[in-house]
Length: 326
Image (cartoon, rainbow, N blue to C red; front, side, top):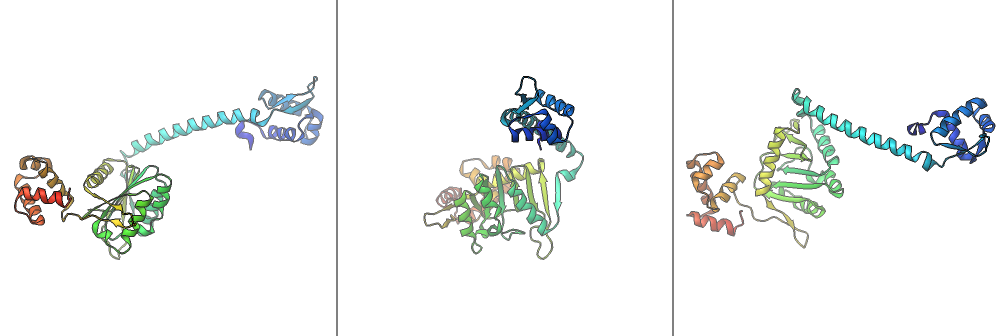
């Protein structure tokens, strides 16, 4: 057991005997160890050089153990420091290897998860091993794991992992969903809502994302993609951040009921266009920012005005402010 501290098997046996006896002479140790006196003396000399024993007689025939915390503590500390340095070096090599192999093997970037059970297992595993943050798009009709079944989230929140979750409005209207979200918020989840979400997403520590590849598989077996650090993951994170900035925060009222504020009958793209419009950005500049034609901008503004039931852009700005669309 003490080989990690630099002791041979015979040295460990000798040291244990001395600890039990407090001190002993060479001949007695030889009898206990079943060794010749010359071999015991050689072992004791090696142990003395290592700081494990000390002579207690002038003729050097009787020895006592150096206290374990002194004899072994420093050696074990050096071993641990060496292991820590080696572990850091291995982590650096692993990061370098992953970065290099991704350039040659796409499977290192995107891994297919082909079954419902496998997706469920991977989703729980990712949350169980999250260190800092989990972000999610929660669309209506979960594929493999409902919010009520996700026991990994409370455990992760308890150990300090941050959760930011965007819920699709229709999902919040499912039975029992609002009380479940309220419970998560009480535990520390940051929750927001939007009228519609394009996909289901779970991203852990901004390092890996799990993304179902088929939205509504019916009776068919679902398939998901596990996406690791790459420009594709950067795009997914940018999508989440854009939706998060426009989503409406959810909060729990004093009576414990989830407050789901009125939401505009607009998608996130129209809300972004509306935000530019009410801040006074001209149609031409809006078109340039959105990468669409000025005519398309005007058509979409007309659609938003129709949804608001107003006739002028000034009325639209007033209506959006009153209804807290932005």
